[in-house]
Length: 180
Image (tube, rainbow, N blue to C red; front, side):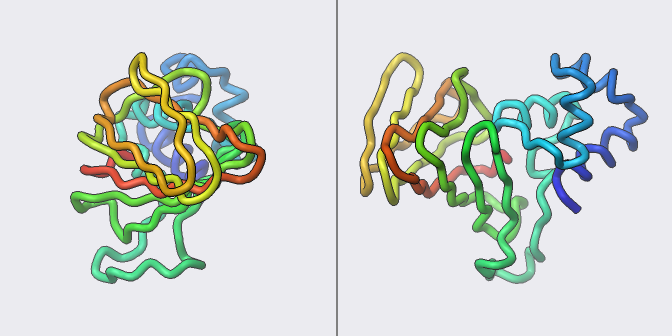
């Protein structure tokens, strides 16, 4: 089941109309409908807002591999496409029920988390730039990171990031506890 289908299933289980969910999120019913039908992918911030409006963590919308199996095969990784953000996330941890979440992100030039800073319920996160260049804003501070650099921050401090290079960037994220 795609995350759009999971959003729809949860909305229907809560007996919410598209209009009611749209009102809660501040988005249009058309946008929510397109997300549910996997016609468009929301930004990271939009996905979090939809999840919060449904009273759920973002992880509810991701397919999980069996927590009994510690291996996540490359071709089985849960994947989230963020077309507006020009990014693609791959969940590397087999379950979001543990204490750690690891995500591999590929970002096209100019892509990123969006113009508005966001926070989430993890306590701490670390981003390692594996490839490319990244601008990272944490609170009022701005950082420029290149391949091999890392940054650690409180997930509850408003932050955002953007691929600042001409090529694709790759980032490895570790968060504790999981907040997707």
